[in-house]
Image (cartoon, rainbow, N blue to C red):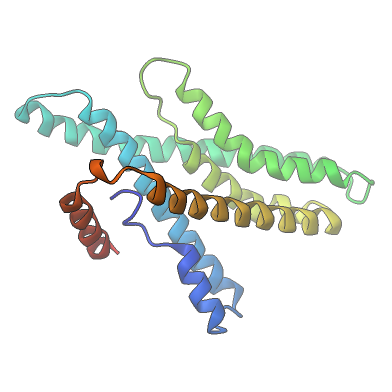
Length: 212
């Protein structure tokens, strides 16, 4: 449910693109950003309540833990966003000090990719420092770091680096989406039907439509 209920940016943008309604870049950014944020919230909530379910507490204690998990979710959001902003500001400062047009396009592209994927790895790595879950989420760190990157870092690099980064990120995003859908299709065909709970699938589908 946490993965199905968030809106699907791929389907929405594909439909609007076929209708010729994506001429305004702001519309694309709003739809895509809102959808990605919903995905991030859904994944983090799933991880928080999955950790809560493993405690196997009684009903009274479980109700208190639900409130605690909700507060912990807010802490994760705040800490992750701050960490992502920090990584984004560092890369923006590095590119600001870097001389534009110095023949180092590959270095600039590397810094842009570090600001995004590096922030995700940093957030996940900080959670592994102790046995207890840490107050960071890699996907939230990535989301906030890319916000800073698009507003500051991309204005500090050369035109060649901007074009390379844009085409490179779009290519990687398209490949990732294609692999995910291919994997889901293969998994449905190869998964044993004996272990499927039809009632649960229908319930999740209905709840997913209502949540959307």
